[in-house]
Image (tube, rainbow, N blue to C red):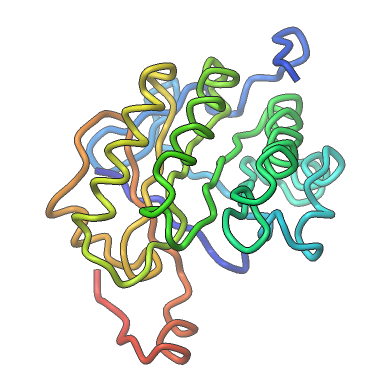
Length: 228
């Protein structure tokens, strides 16, 4: 099992136009992510905001990705595709197109891109998530730049419910992409990595999300920060 930590401060593919990402093909061994040279790596970058809202959608551009690489020294960008509240469920074509713009730009710039199903209730949208990630895996899965994030911040629900969802989506991705990393959200706004570690999803090159916003969660929801 590996742990991928985010900070909230946070086409058709044309191979000739692509640039290799800095660490090549990523893989998971024990508790670390490794590059193609078998050395541990650290990815650093920014997450875009919810794609369906104007505050975030304006940044789903190639210029943003280029700026993150060249001016912010980012080696990864996260495309947070909104699902509910006017997102993918209502406008699948428009929201998917925004994500694809970021994917293509990341491939062109030679950085990694986290394709994030940005949904607090993804367990209720299994079929839609499978359709989306199947398309992404079929279309872009041969690029080592791609990282899948199947469920952003599950709420306070049973891990077994979330695990079942992950297993279905992971299986759909692995039909077409056998190698790229898959990041799995954990319960309580991706805080409960210890629960996931005790009952992990089977498979290779799988990571779990720990989102560093404990003080915010504690203040708003009265949740006591967990010690990991």
